[in-house]
Length: 268
Image 1 (cartoon, rainbow, N blue to C red):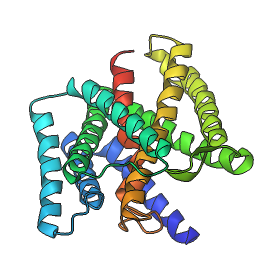
Image 2 (cartoon, rainbow, N blue to C red):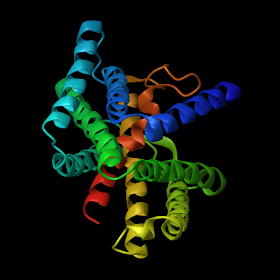
Image 3 (tube, helix red, strand yellow):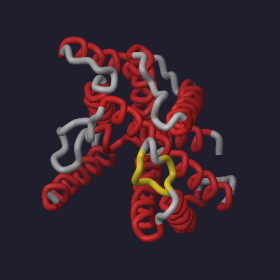
Image 4 (tube, rainbow, N blue to C red):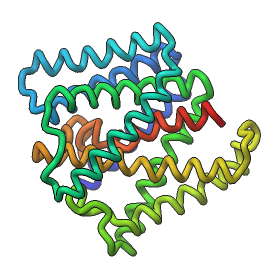
């Protein structure tokens, strides 16, 4: 299992870096749209949809909205979508935890609309961060979430005592989140001195604080997907990535974090 996970991870890293730094804009946009479509297909499980035609239609609608945003240059919408996403995940995760897992998202249409919101804003952010800024900005934005996940994992295993949201995701702890945030803070300091200070005007403190804050908030994205999977009693969102599950399992935190990073880079 570990060997399979490592091979899949290596392939994903190579392909992702090539696409990010070497692909033409249209190829990059197409690749991101394809990822969102696969994510949309997996999202239909949360809606308890079985009909393949309807699932395909949901993926097609997701792609259509992404393309419309690119055609009409709806970059400014990301700010509002990001804030809406944040409100939804904080409210729903908190409500689910306080109700001890009794109150979740039961309406299929609402779950579907939330899925469109998350996947479309994620795709727009991923595309426009590269186009408007650079591939390095995209890599930094994603890397901060990977650093957060790694720091939270190891800190949680070593120091974890107090559960973060046991009714949503029993394995996560407050100590893990704190460890992840601290690691993001340290890495973002290094990034600032090596790269970001050349063009990031607000300064070191703002850069580190906002990077750490977004990384901490990204945990809600992970918790939100855990909530949805718990409602339909599944472990992984899919099987397309051997040893890693589905696409949504790999981008759950990014669905919330990348739109927030768009706001971060747009207003600083």
